[in-house]
Image (tube, rainbow, N blue to C red):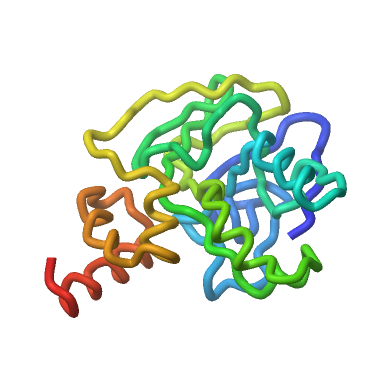
Length: 197
């Protein structure tokens, strides 16, 4: 969970590539693989602005990486990104937005805050999981550019609400197609089958 900023370049590749652990960044590891890691969750991004808001609420400082994110951005609405959106980081790396992060017990224990999972869920700014489309190296200060925007309106925040507090939104996730994290697609299909569209 508690990741630390690094100096110098970091290699980004598909999970399981030579020199890459359970996530898409060299040196990263996934300890609990049931709900974490893999192609659809190769990289986790969180906005610095969201960390700053939590600092104000919690009354303590939160370093970049405090929520377990691999990338801490500034000036980018991470939770407002569209599922399936492609973002270029620096000159080489392209990542695709796949889903929102759902907080679980590991997050609760790490943050050591009462009702942490509920508070995180109520805030509705979960950050985004991404898959690696084009590998390469990234470094602090690399620009982030949107290079593809899909033709739908399903954001990370909407997907998060569909999975947590507003389950009737789940059928909307199906508009995303193959870019959607496979677990979310399964949930959405099950909802439609059980409740109808």
